[in-house]
Structure formats: C-alpha cells, structure tokens
Amino acid sequence: MSFIKHCIFDLDGVIVDTAKFHYLAWKRLAKELGFELKPIQNERLKGVSRVQSLEILLSIGNIKASDAEKSRMADQKNEWYVQYISSMTPKDILPGAKEFILKVRENGIKTSLGSVSKNAALILEKIAITHLFDCIVDGTRITKAKPDPQVFLISCEELAVTPSESVVFEDSIAGIQAALAGGMHSIGIGNAKILSMAERIIPDFTHVDMSILVY
Ligand code: BG6
Ligand code: MG
Image 1: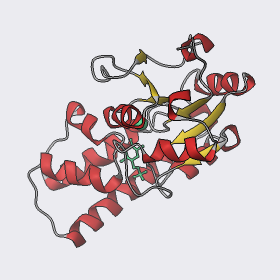
Image 2 (image 1 turned 90 degrees about the vertical axis):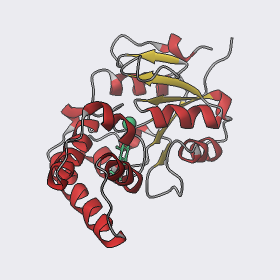
Image 3 (image 1 turned 135 degrees about the vertical axis):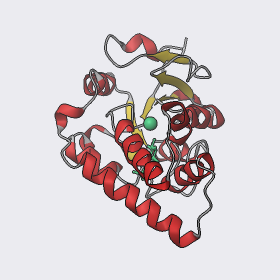
Image 4 (image 1 turned 90 degrees about the horizontal axis):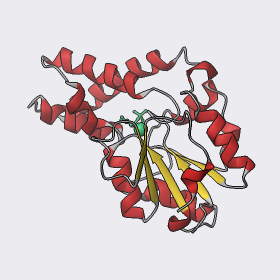
C-alpha cells in the first residue's frame, strides 16, 4: 500500500465548469466560419493549448487560414471566453472540489494546479482559491501543452516529489495521456467512456474521501 504525497488538479472542467465556456466560444467561432462544432468533436479540444485547439477546430471545419488570420481567430475566441468567465465567483466552484482540496491539505498532502490555460490565474482569483495551492503551473509557464507531461512534471520538481507519488485529477483525454506519460497516477473526472484510459474514474468530487489516494 502506498500513499500519495502530491495531488495535481487540472482547472477547466475539474475545479470549475469553464469547459462549457471554452466550448461555447469555440462553437461561436465555428459558426462564424460556417460549420457546427459538435460536443463529441469538442472533446479533442479539451486540455490542449489555445493554439492547438484552434488548429484542431480548423481541421474539423476543413478550413485553411494564414498565420495572421489564426492569430485573429484565437484572440476573438479568447475575448468571448474572457467575457463568459468575467462574472465567475466562488459559487462557481464545482460541488465538492474545494472541500476535497482542503481535506487533502489537512492530511499533509501537497496540492498543485496543472493547467495549460493562460487564464488560470484570473479564474483562481475570481473563485478565491489561489492560496490553496503549493504550486501553480499554468499556460504562462509551459512550452509544451498536454498531452506532454511538462505541466505536471514542473510541480513535482518544484515540490520535490516523484511522479509516482503524485496523482493527477483530469477531465480531458489529453490530460490523462499527460499523466500517464509523466508516470503519475491518474483520476478521471467525468464520463467513464471518454476517460477510459484513466486509472480511476469518478463522476465528480461529491462523496469522494481520502481512500481514493491509497494505491
Ligand atoms: C485548457 C482547456 O485547460 O486550457 C482547453 O481544457 C483550453 O480547452 C486551454 O484551450 C487553453 O486555455 P486558454 O484559457 O489559455 O485559452
Ligand atoms: Mg480540463
């Protein structure tokens, strides 16, 4: 039996339901470009960077664009996204998430944020939980987005814990792949069919206790 020393939490879709705002903004861009972005196609956009999400979106719509057009599209998507998240408050934290993070900390386990979003600091501030993390790694600190494990490896290194003593909580396929590639344990949050490669899967943070951290 081994105990986890470090929990790494993704942000979008794990702590807050911002995954729906990312989807709405990409869907709006797709509509402007003349096609529909379906929920199942949107799964491919989760967890990857803004630029990579745009590339995937354009390939879904079979659309070619110059670098300047891509840059304008990414800026437009982000403008809409930032508008959607502007009214977020601590009430928007997903059920049980804050309580679970607090319980983890009470048990002497380190906590990190591992998100490729460049808006992560803004969201953490809005929902007032920045102080609950020993280490915050976001899109402004990485050079490689998920499924590369860099976003998770940085916090392991900074907190001097090994990947095998760490567990990643993720709602995206790319994020679970990143945890597997980095040698961390993985817990999928959400749909068991979509996240089938995760070591463990829970629907959300309600009714979860510390026993989930025993391996
Ligand atoms: C991830 C989301 O957390 O952040 C992706 O799952 C998103 O959907 C990515 O594209 C980048 O976010 P942002 O806020 O920097 O555009
Ligand atoms: Mg996510």
